[in-house]
Length: 339
Image: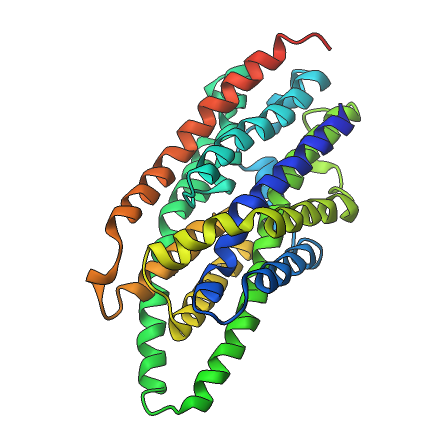
């Protein structure tokens, strides 16, 4: 079951990259700073590097801050392995639905929602750490895009004031800074996303090794090779399927120029890095979308495409419960399969 858990986990990471990869480079591409293929390749490389170089606080949250991993392990190795596989499958189903509809929903929250649904289906509602979910997931889900919005709005005003007499030379410098910020944002994204998938694989590894409930707190983390594989799957997903979300985030919400592209990237980096340090499994997609909205409303609120924004907000609200329901259905079906 461990091999199956790793394979399904890597498939989930691939779908996550395919789903979210385009949002990382959307503003850079639509503002014509980089060509789509070059931007996607840069983001893919940075995703892989981020999964290896940055911290593991988010992985800790995924193991011990969403569901009671002790309760999952108490049901035996088969139950724990089924939990991990079903959580991945439930997440992928919702991600593929929203990817096909070009809606930048949260691949991160679909995995968390699927974990909650699977846990409730086999261990009951008490197996979910609701206080942590409300603080680290729901509150962060609300605050992170709002913070991205506020930073995007304020930083664009600051940039406009600083560069109000800037020449074409400054435009070229801002374009160069945007490429750097794209790389750094993808680096942060790769770390945050790879750790989420690795955390669920970790529970499957515990089950395969005959882990006990207390082991979820004491065993060492997964080898770097597993987290690196998650980052590689993310990178491949971004490079092969990331084009689908570019238009939605980079053009359909509001028209993005060079100045707005850089500020939206910078705002997103600040929020995602703070979340990485705090161990908050936030959605990079939501943060980036919030930042784009912030720079879009800085001088012309009416230029925003409010119709597409309503659809995006609806997808954000639906993701946790929809993925939870999908995960619950998947694990109940998996239990019926003889192993």
